[in-house]
Length: 237
Length: 274
Image (cartoon, rainbow over all chains, first blue to last red; front, side, top):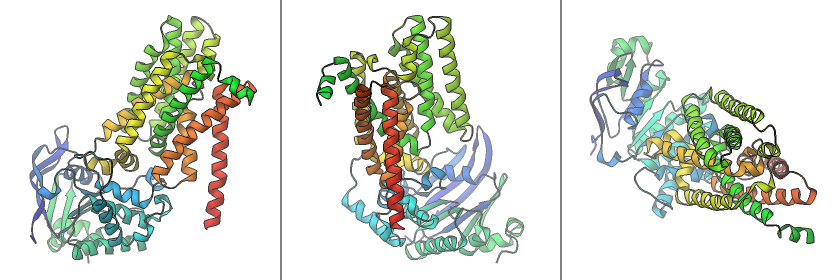
């Protein structure tokens, strides 16, 4: 159970119109892992993210999810759009929408789902904001609400797309601590695309580095001594 | 009071009321999604395309609805693609499409019939424009929109709030977007001969904006927008009968008044809370 494989990429090539951006990619995410995907802009991070979410078919190879994560149950935290920041919806409405997935048609949320939504809000320390309007929250609070929604969709694996972009340093540290709590105490595996290399090195157990056709996958310690890590991570820490 | 009762003895006013109420309800509901997704301009673009199509149909002596409905649906799908493809260029692209459609309409009419009262009523609306087929179509359209909002409410919320998340969880976002824009196209074609091509987009945009000032939950905004759309239309139509003003413009002014009230109320309550 401890090292159940949640997500595995085997000999995967990704790209558009037959032009590969990633080739022969091999890696696995197990329960309890904390993986950061780093790399320069345009190096294929979002392409990889898209295919992990099942929105882009690999050109070659296969990406498999644990059975519990199949059928659209993915805890995804997308980048926020401008339109979202002033959206008229209560926090509760937003969090409940995490239970929707493509397969089932439904008119109501069950009471079990409602109590899980409240529980997830509690885990992220924003339960008292339940009836507040999403647009009145601070950036950090909005991210927590979206994290709670992601947890509703899937409690085992969170996929985050540059979660600290646009947050002030204090809110960013807050978010990192929350993620660390979820990872260590709740056993949630985390896959995060990020530009914040210092914090990535500090928290992650493994790093996937994207670098224009080539890539590095390994533990954080291995990454620091690799050519990629030396160049990109600076001195590390 | 007698004047109001007398108003309902005219069958054309009765028809205008029925079609208007149904169309404003559809427009107001669809409007919430369109405004929040930043697609408000699509409504405006569609009304201009619809004017172009009607002008051409008039010049060629064809029935207006069978020509304009398919043209506007095609335009809606095209505009949706444009908006999705290039986020930055979308507003410019919509402006280009609507100006071109308007220009085609104007040129075609001036070469054939000239600026008749018909063309004028397409531009600014006429209460006399509604016939039986409009009533039937608007009942059907309203049923479709209500069904969509009742059956797929949670999904509509999810795709309006966050397309990327919904896509990742397997909701058919593109399908819903297409459905929304086709329904919007139909709403606009049906409503524009009464409201006028220049004014119809207000039915889509105003109620949603007003409701967003007043309420803070999505469910509240949707319900309030629907009610506001219908109430403002009824007040506008009654006002236009009482003061003999054009329907479209009167409805827009009522909508504007409601928006200003909501804006004042909203900023007042915000000041009180802080």
